[in-house]
Image (cartoon, rainbow, N blue to C red; front, top):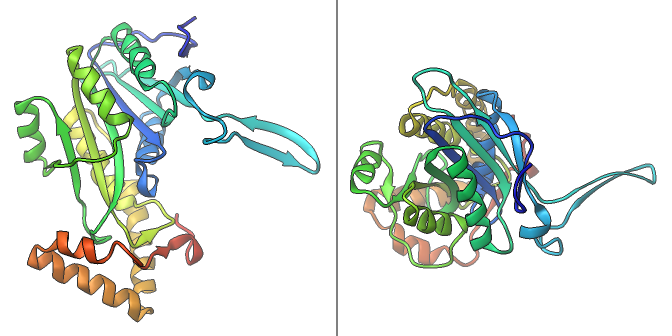
Amino acid sequence: MGNQGIHIKELPELKNALLIAGFDGWGNAMDLSRAMASYLIRKLEAKYFARINPDLFYRYDENRPIANIEQGILKSVSLPNGSFYAVRTGLDERDIVILKASEPNLRWRNFTDELFSLCKKLDIATIITLGSMYDNVLHTDRIISGITSKEDVLSKLKQLDVIPIDYHGPSAIHSLIQSEGEKRGLQCISLWCHCPYYLQGATHFGLLSQLGSLLSSIGEFNLDTEELDTSWKDLNRQIQGLVEKNPEFQTMINELRKAKVRGSWASLKESTKKGSKVISLKDFIKPG
């Protein structure tokens, strides 16, 4: 059952559903986008019901399949993929569909057509795409920016401390979903987490918790983020310990703090584009 681009195992019956999409790839700094999708699937006990046809939307020479070989025996080959999961609340809360996928390499317009066709079948009225980017922010910051097409929704996002985005440059699949979805009468929101450029190699559980709380407020559903908060406290202690032992990192972070107070992020960003020091956490610690 299903169309060419999305293979449907069993179409769930949903009411006033919300679609939350987390993509790997260009807009997935510190793995926040896909990690949020994974967390939602697990905590909400979402059930798999459909998958993206990888042959249509991925270039295998750019997004290479993963081979699992043990003792000279090929056990499996995993293609780049995307899967849909559904949550039926049965309560006053709205139903939820979660898309966890690699960002398509090909046929973005065809992909959005397939996506919106599925949305129509599932009575999905709202789409929220998730992204994350590296920025001149501190690891203790919780900065999330966003875009939407409706003034009342934008006002609500501002009340939730979401910063309206001003941007001109290369785009991810999120922008096309936003643009085409609005043309079809869907309410579309795109949320972007701002990750510290100097800190790589781990998932930022603090930002994940902030994003989870934001999603639950916008989508009007309950989400327990205590696990994320606990993981962040542990990881933050390790980061602080690492920074305290390294004078170079201390200087860098102090400069960021001063720039934040002065409101001079833009000038600092220009000065740190070249030769910026990066902490790769995977070389030092094992995130929980």
